[in-house]
Image 1: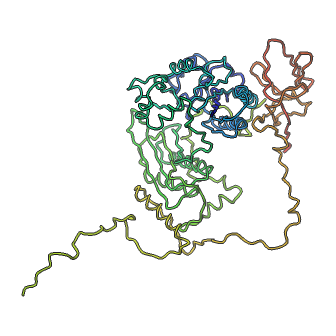
Image 2 (image 1 turned 90 degrees about the vertical axis):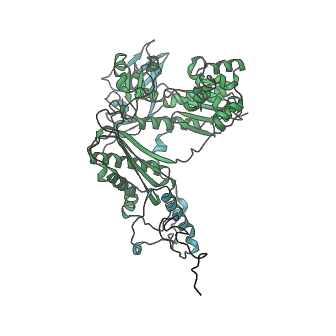
Image 3 (image 1 turned 180 degrees about the vertical axis):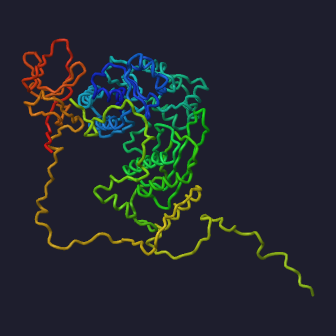
Length: 412
Length: 195
């Protein structure tokens, strides 16, 4: 029989902050999104205060203050590094691993003969001592069931962070499903849930007891797969290699509204570089570049506008010395003055593997050769990337990049 | 006899394919291509077609035909006597391998203060801390007491735990029963940079 484990970090962002600031242990913490916009992560203590996910920061500012809840800006360099440490440790426990998100990972334990419960306890302990991050493990005969098991392991402390759902009696299993809304099931999105609710499938138990034909009619083959997974027939395989990206987007809400062309240009040039770096990391090249900027749609005082333009290229390009000036040029063509732009971005699509094949109609530019061959080539910036940095987002409560920057190491 | 104007057959005006209505939306030309380059030309044309279809403005890089060189043979054949050291090549020395035992559990920490001067830890030194190691008595550890970090040498004797400073000016910290002590990690090396 197939057997999967889902290892999920508990309140991952808050836990990362606690590793380097132990005095935050047992304190309520919230983490804000890019630009300190809204709440994207909460510690259990903050959840207990009734702070909601996605709530705009300015709305709950006073409540956070009153309850002396610790506020942190998101520190992705730190979370990313801690995540890769945790994932590497998990990978030692099975040859087949899928890194599902920054804080979740599936592993395949099919055919493992040892006591899986204690095997996973060892994993949990190792991740905790090696990195300081607490995790919970859910075991099940399918990925969906492992996900459910993880949910239980999180809620009930008596399982000590590891729970095997296949050991549950049918009666208890149904009771569990009854306590869950159908939209809480993994893979059921809002639209699917709406469709199910219309035919009175409201709880996960309703879904479980529904006719497979109805599920297939309503949700198609994907719904049918989830249904079968719930019954213990493994339909969803571990995806060891993440599917290649279809597009790369680098976009940001600006720190303040920008009305000056130079400021917008700086923002987009820098975003273009970030997009190119992301693309190169995956050895991809693009043939289509889109640039977009927009004004704040919620602003009451100024008119709204959203501008975008897409440029195609005759050959796949991965070279920043072509792409960054191209973004600037495109912006120049589409820019309209007299507006307050609050958000913008660059999208690279139509991605193909970057084979750096010699193309018939182009030749490698001298600048790009310089970039790739000169020892300080990567330090060179375009003039358009420099400026007053007005666009940069707010991160007023950010902790140090303890693990990725020599100047910001933990001081003891 | 009067010649009748022909009413049937022949070319009709407006018939046939419209000008520039083809896949490329412009005049095309027939041309011979070396077989070895057919795939490349084809793929370039396919891409161009798809972009025209998507109504995307296409940038054709301007180029000076005379300066385009296609280096088809790039690999060179090395001549000369092979290096006698080739058979004795070894890995270069890697400090990471020497100093880091558990990569995922290793963190770098900057030392503050002089309390561990006797152990060779100076202000500003970089400590290599391994969280995977067991905090045995006698090891230098990063400890957390009441939520605050400290570097000290750990002493366990007959159930009494002491954190010892290595500087006579600092007092040892006796861990009383009931107070919480967390060992965050074990210090394995100290890096003292002179320059």
